[in-house]
Amino acid sequence: MASKAAPSCRLVFCLLISAAALRPGLGLYTVNSAYGDNIIMPCRLDVPQNLMFGKWKYEKPDGSPVFIAFRSSTKKSVQYDDVPEYKNRLSLSENYTLSISNAKISDEKRFVCMLVTEDNVFEAPTVVKVFKQPSKPEIVSKAPFLETEKLKKLGECISKDSYPDGNITWYRNGKVLQPLEEAVVIIFKKQMDPVTQLYTMTSSLEYKTTKADIQMPFTCSVTYYGPSGQKTVYSEQAIFDIYYPTEQVTIQVLPPKNAIKEGDNITLKCLGNGNPPPEEFLFYLPGQPEGIRSSNTYTLTDVRRNATGDYKCSLIDKKSMIASTTITVHYLDLSLNPSGEVTKQIGDALPVSCTISASRNATVVWMKDNVRLRSSPSFSSLHYQDAGNYVCETALQEVEGLKKRESLTLIVEGKPQIKMTKKTDPSGLSKTIICHVEGFPKPAIQWTITGSGSVINQTEESPYINGRYYSKIIISPEENVTLTCTAENQLERTVNSLNVSANENKEKVNDQAKLIVGIVVGLLLAALVAGVVYWLYMKKSKTASKHVNKDLGNLEENKKLEENNHKTEA
Image (cartoon, rainbow, N blue to C red):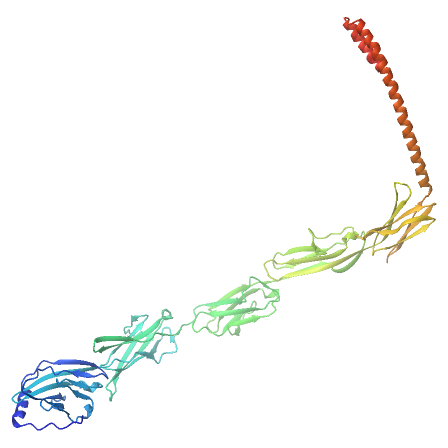
């Protein structure tokens, strides 16, 4: 509703207003309102029966009144005065409660409700308080890092748009930070916006950090008063990177190994425990007094046994801060004598040695033709079975991948040696002639037969093992024959012969017949002798029986007779 000028009062009414202003009113009443909300102020007066109208005003700082709303009791009409700051913001109800929309800081005033009769004026003052919650505090302008033992600005805690102004507090790990000379310096300031009349609070913190502040959270809070009392709002945590100098240097060997062997690549890495860590170091190699400037790593490639020794590193600007480590480069040498392919003659002596040189005790294994030997080979007189492929293998058990091996291929040569044997079949009709041959390379065997005879099995050969094998012929000679065995290899040709008689078969048959006749005659004579003995025994037994019957009572004679009988039998 558009504001209209209040009607001019009569002289009596003006005097009453003046008199009412001099009369003490009701006690102060306070209305608390949040910024932007509606301000509701009841009149707090009982409406008199002869009420003419009601009116609201506020007082300027100098005490002069400013009328803002009017309501007639008879016409039920409402008029609002032309006050720019309250234009379209006022509402006056029938019970004379005044509402002000969109509360502002400038609304903090002393308002007065006035009820007027023809003979009196009643007043009820109300004090309006407006509150504005500040924004959540935020730590800004944060230091990228803090350095130990240096007083440095950590950051600023800022909270905006507060009314009334609030107070800012700093915390370290949840505990309040109090100002401390040359260690904790807090500077607080506030600023009011001339338009909104809202406050912005800022608190800067200078802090001398220590290593104990690593990963420690810093926060801040703003404490303010609102319609319902005091409140506190906290910021998010802030954790700062703490810089501190290196106090210790360490050296590492990469990649980490139980043992380093010749041919490996190794990398030395130097580390400082400061923050930020040092980026450059001096590396000292064995036998070199001057350090080599490098990043935090230094690589050695294809190391040899002479790289064994102490390795050190230090800071560039503080050489006394040094770290060291000992590196042992393990090695393994193997020498086999003789090695490769060796050809010897049967019966020769061959000394064999496998010499080991290593950084620590090594195991030695001998193999022959992929079969492990119980001991190292030794040859005082070579045999054909000594030939083969020998391997001497050694290793360092504690050093992965450090193995060596050498091989010897031994060839034992020999001229062919022949031995011939003869075996007659039990029937006497055939003979087996065997030619035993020894030699290497394998001799070839040839048979030659001089004379006539039936060859039952031309040739049969055994397997060639350890330089030996044989060939045999089964023959039934019709006359005296000669069998010749020829053995030949790259070294020599050897010949041996064996005579076989055909009469040997006939003689053996006759001998067998005579033997059979003799055996039959012998058996017949033995049977005849046994019959005669039995006849004599029976005859003498009868004679002895007669003497016993005649002289039964004579014991001595019986004994003599018995003795005589025994003698007769004998």
